[in-house]
Image 1 (cartoon, rainbow, N blue to C red):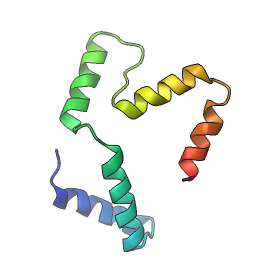
Image 2: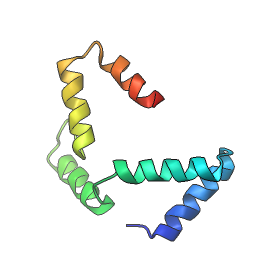
Image 3: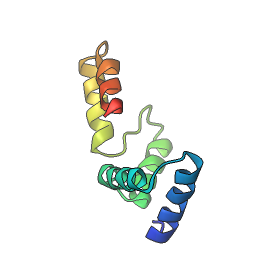
Image 4: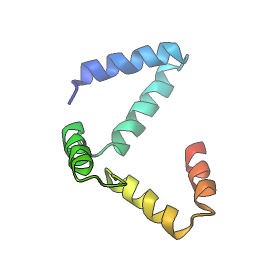
Length: 88
């Protein structure tokens, strides 16, 4: 896992690139940390195992599994639901 200093440096550069205020950057970092609950090492292991087993879909994390379930239950309205979530 990358150190907090490297992560903050990376996002500071993105802040400059996309002209984000420090407050907006802090808000996005907080959201990013809340969404990513699986460490990169474990996510990588899941992906590698999926590729080795030739899985057609590799879902990493609860959010991906939830989105896949919603997509299968409501294939027509899924994209509307996804678009609403992206606007928030």
